[in-house]
Amino acid sequence: MGMVVLDNQNDFTLSDYITDSMKFIQFIVSLEETMGIELPDDFLDNEIMESALGFSEKLSSFLSSNND
Image (cartoon, rainbow, N blue to C red; front, top):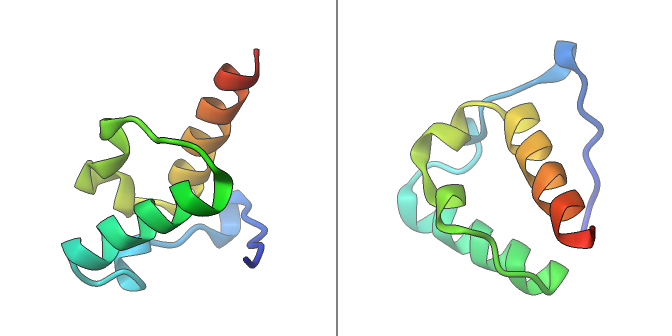
């Protein structure tokens, strides 16, 4: 598993790298398996693909809320 460092100047659109819905679902399932978590269904919304930074913040918020 790799790591990407994001800041406001380096945000990118996830759909530039994950080009179709099946690949996106595979990405989410792989993420769940790697992290040993189950993400809520709202992570499958296509709008989340518009910003890697937004996805990262949503994931971070989800993980923080589950650790409390």
